[in-house]
Image (tube, rainbow, N blue to C red; front, top):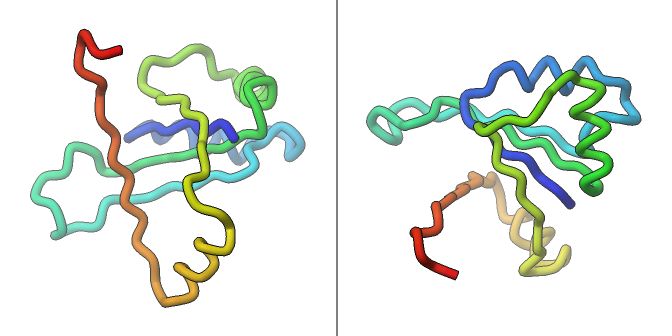
Length: 109
């Protein structure tokens, strides 16, 4: 699964809604920062869109008229725990999703 993550890139929301269904992402999430938790958060919105593979991502970008961007992170998911663990975890009640991204320091392999 290929997932694109963007912060405060609101024009991606209508792009997801406007492309033909077969070219649209497998999953799209818009997450707004919760006021009062973090003082002056660096971003107010995180958008994630997931695709089956790189060709699917490219077809979506072409249909949506989105060219190369330097404000979107493209990632490949690696499942660390299986579906059973997730189902059991989420059956315990409401879930908050925490996403932490870090930039690799210069000079690291």
